[in-house]
Image (cartoon, rainbow, N blue to C red):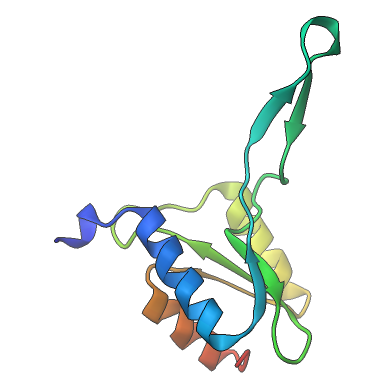
Length: 114
């Protein structure tokens, strides 16, 4: 399998397994929008703000940690994701993009999250 053939969902599953092994309190955040009700009572519910990362939580010393998963080839951050990652890092948290579970583990170690 070539890098371009690896979907983002596979990267998300890899990172999920890494987080499970580390014991960090970082959870998967599903973003999107859905409707409830009918007719005049119909409402749109947004599950998270634009730019929210795929995984968010805290590390072993209480710092906020966010991980955005992208496929190894061709995955691009939206402007909202770029801003959120920069904002988290600017404010003392740890936020990064991971293209594999191995990369996520390496960055968690580099940032002393584990």
